[in-house]
Length: 422
Image (cartoon, rainbow, N blue to C red; front, side):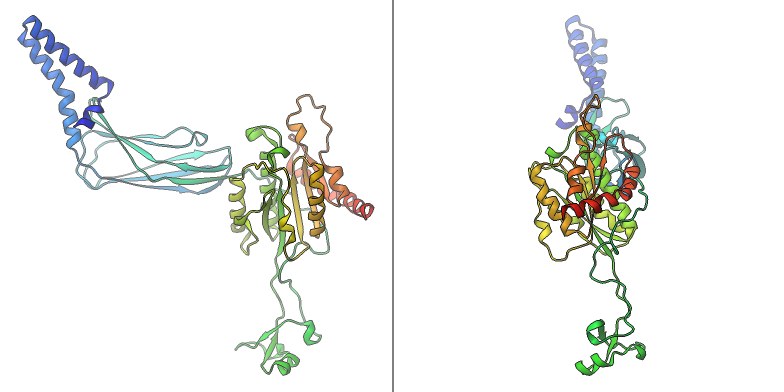
């Protein structure tokens, strides 16, 4: 009852004040009729609060978000299912779902006719132009009487997450360099002739063609061995993103870091569709949730895009090159870089020598804060070309697909720079 009285609305408090005033005036002026009016006005919010306080209801909420992973600018649908398994409450339900402001305004619903076994469905859309992971909920419920005199508040505890990935643009197909791109454990090869050292064999299994039996290996091991005519192979690519706070300029969605994240996401999707297994490496090292994986293209980009969605700038002054000491060299490396300092050159040189083919997008970060257009264009491209990278600049007004296409014409410059460096 105390909670119900505390839930009196402005209208309910006005009724109480009016009733008390009428009773006091009736006593002072000696008007019995006014006393009855005052008691009636005072009793209305009091009785309403008593009825709401004694009401018993048990609400259950099921919230689903589909899809849970969307690109920036794309909508997602939130479905709500409410059921009442308790006694019928008096009045109506006022529902409000707590939504982060970047996803839009908070949705509100008014539900009436609530009885035992009551069930209602509601849905709304959310949309964000900013990448990140957002929590939707909890849902707050207010029970109100038909006169609007009393409101009681309740709240659910469950929430649902929505991950908004960076914007991506389709990229044109360009030569990535080298006789073969990427690196993998197995590459398709056929073995028609050669010695036991030249082929890959395995134990004989029921149903294998006897013409594939490798007799020399069988004689040496004492068991029947057959040739493995083909080995599955998948190209591997490393996507490096410089997310140091000091290497970028600008604030919010208009910063050079957001442009770098969007470019990295577009490159990851493009390489995955070309058959690459892509891993993400940042200024702090390899991201654990986006390591090389053997999945389909559309599914395989999910962990990497999720890592990019929640990527935050780091304040480390140096690039972490510890991941370059792992086993296995070669393959494709694509770097999306911000401002490059002299301390970064040794790590970039090791990164280039570690890769079979190296491509770089160098963000012209000074252009993100230059208002009069006097900043020298090009960024760190000359330094990268001297280290053997195929590098092109990327400015705030440049189209990513056009810049990616320019990498094909930068191949010759990268080869000449490599020869000069040697």
